[in-house]
Image (cartoon, rainbow, N blue to C red; front, side, top):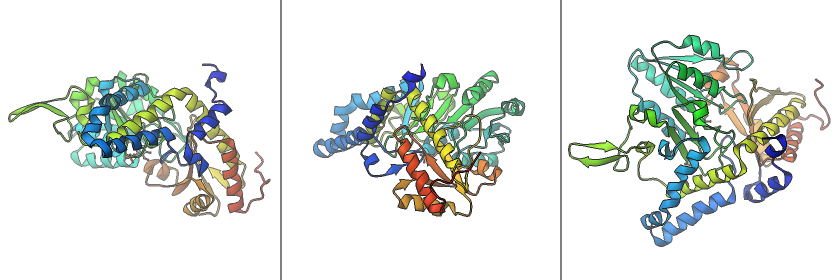
Length: 408
Ligand SMILES: Cc1ncc(COP(=O)(O)O)c(C=O)c1O
């Protein structure tokens, strides 16, 4: 694709913002927590709930059964998978945990993870050590890049799993997940990717990544409602993962003597959940696919680089992001300012940013001696004018003249 084709035009940007009522109320730089949804996503959810209220919930489900089923196809299209490799769940903790706990490790097994690993995944990794499983964390190098050579040399014949987070919740760096996938494949090791901050921000192709398991959130860069997550499980490994919970949706041919599992990834779901949210997730995926993930990523990447440059010019601000490849998450702090108070001050000016405590990305932040951060997470629907506004507001809060700049 040429640069011209990859650019989101000003007309399109205006259209996306018109289609997103939230952009008229707030400057939203908290997309890594949850993005502003397009209006049509919310309308989809509300219309379905109205049908449930007017005609009955199970009756509404029958009416929408094809659309609900189509959501699995849309997610499969988004990540280059097959429809029967997709499950829809409520939160990423459950999605990641369902796959991880279902793998059933034994004493002596080894798992390799990365310093950017998300805290709830990390807690499960800490927990599994009680069962005699060795967990090795590979730290990024001093430039914030993942050392692929070290990964190679850490692998032993006992390594059963490589589990990494592609984009951390509080950091601008990214992991080379395709290169890691090639190494996992060479050694025949299961490979699991947390793509919660990736879906909707960066193109995902599970075949190119070479992962067996991938979990991703709807509410973050995909712009779907809260309470929506999907789990990809490669057909080839579905039988290696024991579903933690079973109901009549996951198990079939149930007799008093046994049952058979569904022949697809939906064995990792339970039947009862919100159909309205599933449809909202589908609409959000469709919206992203219509724009194109390459174009979304190109704009986010550009806007994030622009934001980092602008922040670096403000005296007293330190941008902490590291690594050769950086994403839409920008983290910084200001000399002499408490990060929580800085976040609150920006929010009081109608600018949503977030505060990142060391817990969310525990190893990375501990390694870099970062107790907390302020996080600006940009999306394609944010504008340069909004970036200018946040920088001017920061200058006012810090008491820095509007035209004072750090000379490089
Ligand atoms: C990288 C990453 N993984 C997992 C999660 C957890 O998602 P959930 O709150 O849906 O469990 C988050 C949330 O911030 C995240 O940033």
